Image (tube, rainbow, N blue to C red):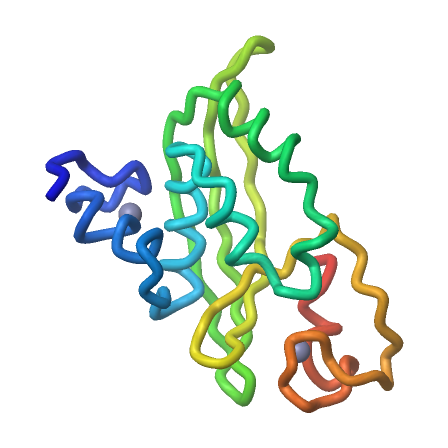
Length: 158
Ligand SMILES: [Zn+2]
Ligand SMILES: [Zn+2]
């Protein structure tokens, strides 16, 4: 078992924190998924970043640019500000956080309110940069069985 501290800032060992989710266990909340995605950027786990994005968006992700950003950045830390869980079926959540990193252009800080949805026992990141080709009255791409407008529409592109 690795004795390194988890990059997400929890203070816990990686294997007992985000490493557990990187190994395939479902993250129990949107916040733990978000933290494990930050750790995946730090550790260069590109496939994990792809796998935890809403499945219908995965083909639209640019793996090469994700990998380049992950590798060319020195990650300085994550602060989770709030986690808003809405309940209902499926469950949606917003997680507001600030990530800091350093690259060839200097130090950066990015604050974001990210959207997440739970589908079949797993939380997924709804990536606002990948277009969802779906009409408001179509079946929601999260597979909830609801119409898009009654499900993830309000959580897309925040
Ligand atoms: Zn962690
Ligand atoms: Zn949905």
